[in-house]
Length: 396
Image (cartoon, rainbow, N blue to C red):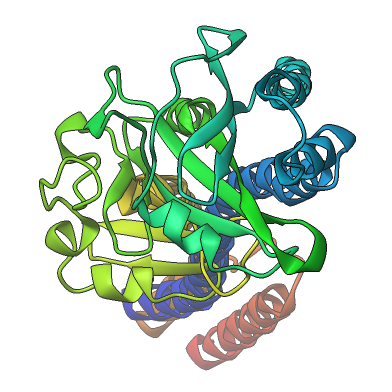
């Protein structure tokens, strides 16, 4: 009878194990995929929001600088500089009005580090700086002749706007300390008959939004960096890696050195993308400069350890394994009980039949069940009674 019991047990366990394992495997697979996709979506959303914040901040610069290009105070300077009859004091008064407009605008728009009007020879004519949260008119003006952003602005047509690299501000040719990262926007100022009078240069302070980006990365398993179009670091947890380009500190530190296989690919991306370096999921978002769609300000690159992304999936897998084992244990216990309940009457019938074969026909065969085995036991008992009657007649 043990073989029947074992067969029933094996069959029931197979019927229990196959669906349980199949359902658990599908549950683990679908849950892991869902958690992974959700984690990646969260990273994409986060870095996209950060990128949009920068885009919105910089998109207003073009309208601001062109507003001043055609402002009354700017037109007044153009007219008075072209009139040889005016005195030096009258020309200085026109510059003063532009300086006051710059000052009022700087106080309203603290994102600007500097507002300047330069002559066509690169000399500062009017300048307003914002330092320590306060705006002031600067009287000690400098000669910016030969600077790349000046030269790039002087060759533009009327209404065009130049965007510089995001780099460190220099005073008298030297990087100013503490470091002050800026983005320069410039537009030429033309007068009547297309005569070039100078250029407007607005320096946007990058310190605030770089600090905001740095604060957005709070997890120890997450790292946010920003690189320029050449891969040099503009934002990095390790300060020694910052500003490695020739324009700045010339250390040569850039993302191609840290990611030899992916660095070049990252700075060549035209849109948002997700990459994998074996240890991290890397989410990349190009940062627009607000002016030129063909040239990015740089790239936001977010690293998050795969263990962090897969941690919920690993927990889900462990949960399904425990559930599966508990289900199998419970199924085994239930099957053992059911197998014993099914085979016990068969065992009793077998014993009764063996007793009858040995001549014991006095013991009634009674198996109380509610199924066919009960009917079989009644039939066997009738057989016992028939044999008993025949034996009695035979003996008499």
